[in-house]
Length: 256
Image (cartoon, rainbow, N blue to C red):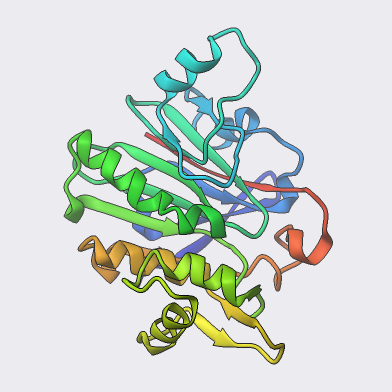
């Protein structure tokens, strides 16, 4: 089993995962608010350069070079997207989340890394498979990838409409009709769907859907780690948009 470890920086807690032990990385907590990725990069490695995006709940994955060509090196405006892939050493790439899933990926052979923000919309649009396709284009082999999903809202408390569940479920089942998709999801082993007492609602485990997308690409369960923390149910460490209705975030990052 992959283990998760609490680290400490000047009395502030952040999480790391044994699966990503080859890289400087961290899933940071609300205690670091409102520090920026530029500040947090120094916690992980003093010489790395930080990159981040203006997240839009989509499936656009960019490289630092693409960011610079889009925004101009002097421009403070952020490029739009929800995923980043490194191109060279000492590039720190960051994503923000407050219930959505932060996904960090490392390749043990090429050493390249990716950081992704996978909310329900990004998951429905297959942002993680999208990023993996880009990594493969840059020389990665599926067997060399290590994928850690950080703290996010868990299925037992994430109530969504049946329509939203079907939109996400369409990414892992061949069906197109809402009721067929829902039925197929319920039949999956370790189903990402849980029943809800409200008509027209279900509980949805978004991280499990991402894991199933990965498994359909031929990635084994040993290559995937999911943090045992729910942002909604762990108020002492994590912001939760659903719990507080406030736009506060925690950052997750990894350095090539």
